[in-house]
Picture 1 (cartoon, rainbow, N blue to C red):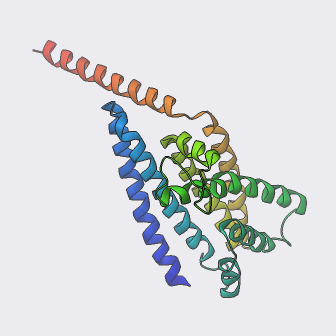
Picture 2: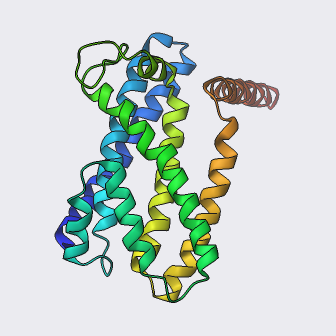
Amino acid sequence: MIEVFKASVINVRELKQQRTNIKRLFNQSIKRKDRSSFNALTKLYALLFSSFAELCFLKIIHTPYGFNEDEINQISGQRNLEQKWNKCLELAFSRIDNIANKGDIQNKKQILTRHINTFIIEPSQLRNKIAHGQWLVALNNDNTAINQQTTDKINSLDFVKIDILFSVYEKIGQAVEDLIESPRKAHFNDFYFHMTELEYLVEETKTWTMESKIRILKETAERQERIKLQRQKDSESAY
């Protein structure tokens, strides 16, 4: 099991690097006002998140000093992603039954479940469509007709929304890993800390949009240009 965890860590590290690379390309396309690249980079970013989410889940359930082999098999044997996450949470929270306030822990479980549904389960349906080449028009599960609702969701995807998914997933993963490594007290305290960070991140990113990102990048570029021009003037006046 430790080999799977180590391999997952290496792969996740690589995907994080590629995430940085794609974000840089996207920011460059904004600065160049090259909107023709937006769609392609957005869909590629969605596919990268799909790989990232799958690998992170594998890493989570193989956390050292966490689940035993039977528990991992119980999770992996579930039929779909939603059931796998539900089983993972069930087993993770069972590890702290004797060291925590049950009412408070039930509340935290509900919060985690809600965020997992919103930021992991629901987007997974769109990622599956995109992975099967349905970049603009989505079909139903039998590929016999157009699924207009999913089509609308795919076309409303933007780079910023996917970027939020990355950030929220990381916080969810940290919180769940803390649970899995409990009942050691230090990890249980870390769980509360990461849950607080998760709630703050979700609230903070509610107002993030593509338009606000473009505006911020534009303002940053203009500020940098003003600084550059001022430095040139200062340098000339020095002579």
